[in-house]
Length: 275
Image 1 (cartoon, rainbow, N blue to C red):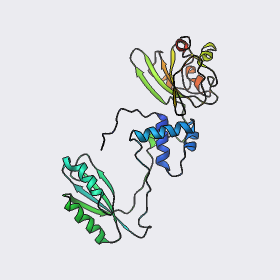
Image 2 (spheres, helix red, strand yellow):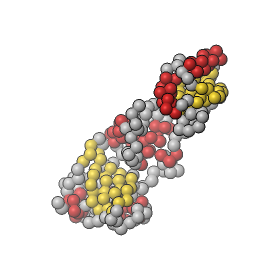
Image 3 (tube, rainbow, N blue to C red):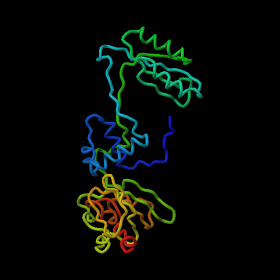
Image 4 (tube, rainbow, N blue to C red):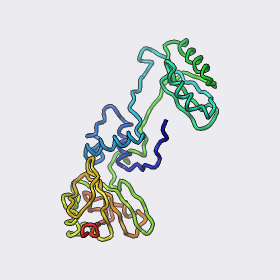
């Protein structure tokens, strides 16, 4: 199994996509997620593909009530395996007929959990024998009555309301910050080129637009680049701030990329548009 990539930073759009899929992966569409996150459906599809390729979004599975599906028994085996063999034995135990879930734990004696389905107790006894034959020591076992799932709350909206904070925020040395923001439909900058935005005072000398994501494309900003609603704009801000003001809709420098509330510092790319 390849090592998971750990250097990818989820932004607010990624988190909201994951939250929606955890909440209802079957009935959730890219269009419905796009409506709640205020980006295009193409952007959502592109983000989902990226999350899949990075191994963050690992799959889409059905949760089955096996008691209702024929009165079958669901058993949990709490097992102990040597740490060097843990991953290999986990994969081998998955091949046992009836096993539907295997979980490895970092520490403790019961460091391998196996869930198996059987119509009768003899089916579960067979699973126990097969586990033992693999060299897996069963510490304890019990029938599962029920289990419940919920999406990860920190990935969801606060109080089910959209926030107008930047999608991502990185503080750099030298009193600079990188901010990623989504352009709202009524934002003052929407429909303007970066040069026009600079000339009209929408963008200032302290801020530089360094990237624009539109649907499935990464655009290099130029003076004649027109900013569209739902664009995800990455901005380098040279203002002296700890980030608090940049996250507050009360700061007028944040209101120019949003519909009366969010996102980038006013007048932010004179250096870029004049080059």
